Image 1: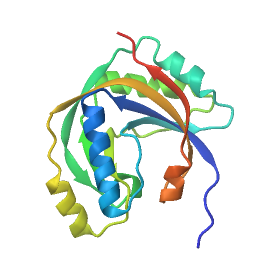
Image 2: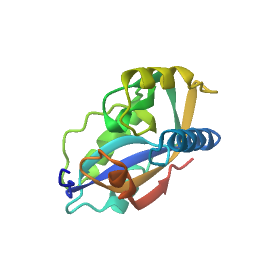
Image 3: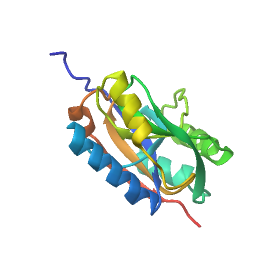
Length: 179
């Protein structure tokens, strides 16, 4: 068995508001139970950087100081070969989201290049292509836009490739977007 990656990062998540939060949490829990996969909070990763010397609370406070809740438009349900993007909701990017990503990058003690790709994963699991295609086709979203009203900083293994990696996530900070 390969040795686990112990280097950690800070991942900054945008959290959906209700009722989307409950809907996504229910889908994630149902798929996790059905496919023996890890359960996780519904989120869109907006930036990830080196954890060393970073103060996640300070970074969130700085980056979200002027950020109001905002909506992202759903592009569709997709799938990939990546463990953390097995089946996911793809969103359109927006100026507000791009601005928030840049603000978090600037607030980070060791900024790095981050490729923003707004998506919300529904399951983390190694699956056959046909299983992913069938699963993606079976998901029906009751909305075309999702409101996001808070953010979290998560301490995470640098590489997330297993249930154990997902279970190692720790919340470092939480911040509501202001009205």
